[in-house]
Image (cartoon, rainbow, N blue to C red; front, side, top):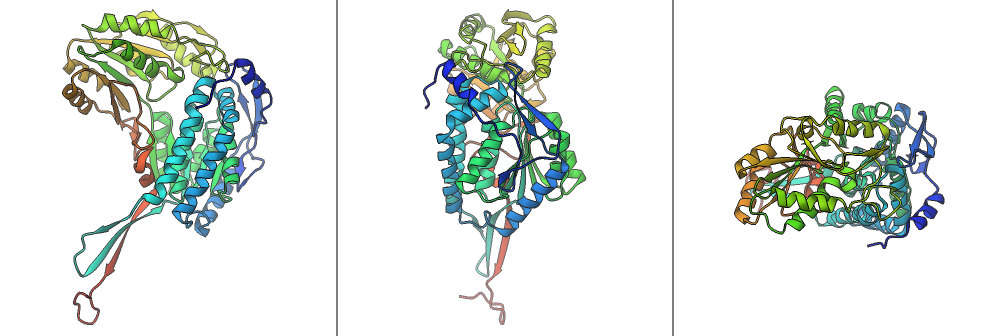
Length: 501
């Protein structure tokens, strides 16, 4: 784990970063054909650099290069152990450049430097390393075909994969996509969010240095309509893996239906509950998990705890501890490691989040509720109507809604009263009740007596409108970047039809 520097030291590093500002196509940086795209530091409003964005012409070129590299087998046909070694070398290069990447991530996204240093960069390395180490330890299968045949079930790389990323975790979501896709032998085209392109471009450069061949990993910065849609509609793209809003996810399903029926995997929004039952223990620890789950990354997190569903008997004691802990979470300059919350991604998103603060119906504000430009203080509303926007819509900001229940059955009903089903948390001292409740909640990941998403080995994705088509992380991620093939071998004697001994 890196030791944090001072804010002055981080500012000095920031002043000397050479930002990548052109697309990475066919193994090198080169000019794009789209309009200039400004990379803006959301905390200050200052322009970091002007990026050459891409358009459909660049998409066509990148897809052609990706297809060429895949068909030639320069990566896809490498021995899995050889692919592993290249990805391990990439991890070493990221480690060597980790501080530059952390500062670049903070400047580009408004994320607190403490999170970039202590969470995002280390977990990016761990994710790539996990999938690299897994790739030469995964076995294909044989089927029960009897004595006169041999049934082989094998996995082959899908081909050309488009990875479309969100702006809230640029590095980590990049790793979640490219690690299993590259490990499985695919050629990958990354479309970063237009607000946060810098670290993806830098990783592509490091990947080439590590030994990823030309055309195997490319990064196309640009707007959704200029790059995302052309990738989604392109007949040369075999699969799209998307993380982002549910509305945009629906568009990729439409693009696939209107083009080549490419595989589509979606990880979309959430309205995630934390259910605290009457017998929950260690309320100080419960409060710590709830505050972390609700306000980590300014609440700009699809798995953020946005609904606290708490039993009436324990609510006063818990809220006292939650509000006390929130006051330790300072908001301000992202490059100051003392701050837990940085800036929201841009003014447009700030207006959306601030709208929930000013239109809270009859809810009671018990903490926060203030905005200073793109900085919004961690906010808690009590007495929230379960049918209100606070309780039903994904806010994607540092806002926690408290809903009160009198039974576990009511808590489960409220937890499931949403169009989403990404994550949930359950807090109780009764192990059987914990498992019953976790099974009853319709969500892809349910943590018990903690807030968490699992780790690199556990699949991540959602039910209902939170996900479609697959999962990130774990061996399940490898499977979604492959095609299953059955090879049937006839072992009977062609002359007699008898089984060959």
